[in-house]
Length: 92
Image 1 (tube, rainbow, N blue to C red):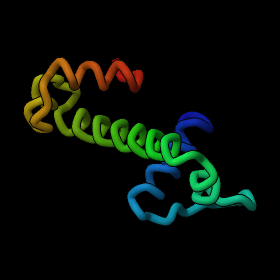
Image 2 (cartoon, rainbow, N blue to C red; image 1 turned 180 degrees about the horizontal axis):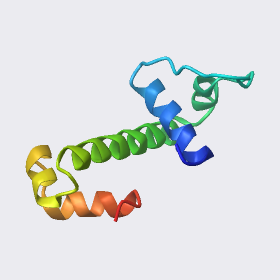
Image 3 (cartoon, rainbow, N blue to C red; image 1 turned 90 degrees about the vertical axis):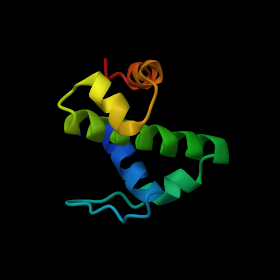
Image 4 (cartoon, rainbow, N blue to C red; image 1 turned 60 degrees about the horizontal axis):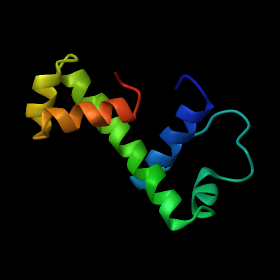
């Protein structure tokens, strides 16, 4: 991850998928899971969905070598909606 926000999203995504994140060095006392659970349901869900969408898009774009049309086909997603999601997540 390139910055703290990306790292936080990776950790939250791992938690949303039921994976335990592995931390090296000095881990903060308050776990990422606890901070996620401290959010309102709406905010926690939004963060989990955002993280999933970014990871899903990145994976499928990588698999399609950045080809938007191929990514839309692979994901069975309308191309215009794919472009909207990419824009929302700063991917284009």
